[in-house]
Length: 240
Image 1 (cartoon, rainbow, N blue to C red):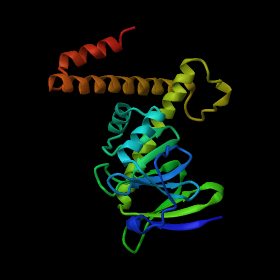
Image 2: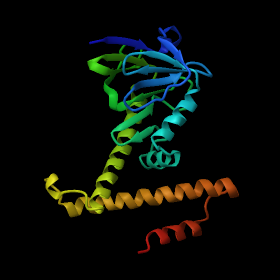
Image 3: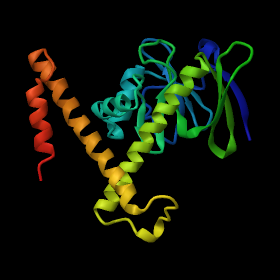
Image 4: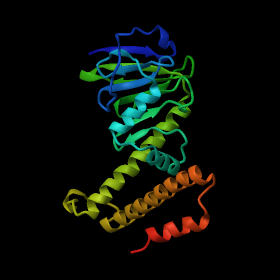
């Protein structure tokens, strides 16, 4: 079993195992990635390889989102709902999140679901993450961000994941695919739970429709969606 410390503040000093033209970031093959320079991206794989990809971080993230059908508007709606402007890429249990805002040159994207633990370094107040590689390997990754910022972003991604998984359960119930005997609800019956999930589903749907409408309206007309149009959209959505 490998146990290795990687100081991301010394990115230009890290050993590079190889440089490749193409690399598809996936939920289970990558621990983290960050911009190495203007045209190359550093990737730490689950096998512990430290690679340089001859492509910009922005373009790699775009391909990742396309491959996993993670739409920008969807993440904008979800993260706005939980009150976080710093967005990641979330698909239920799978979460790729940034250590800070995407405009920060030192931003690092890492797989939260492959993170075992994280704590503040007493020496310089940075954060050290323990990432789980393949076959039990552990990578202690030190990153330049405050613990408060780190926890806030992870917490927001967790809330988004919880909403997505709740919606999944609701749709399974709605389509008759959930067997009641699989669930034992100690405090709340199915009626209470699914009533709450129904409200969540409707709320997120309305938020999504209005968000898409407003982005398109501002692009075409240069202004926010008129209140009357918003009201009519809500009326149409709620009509049975």
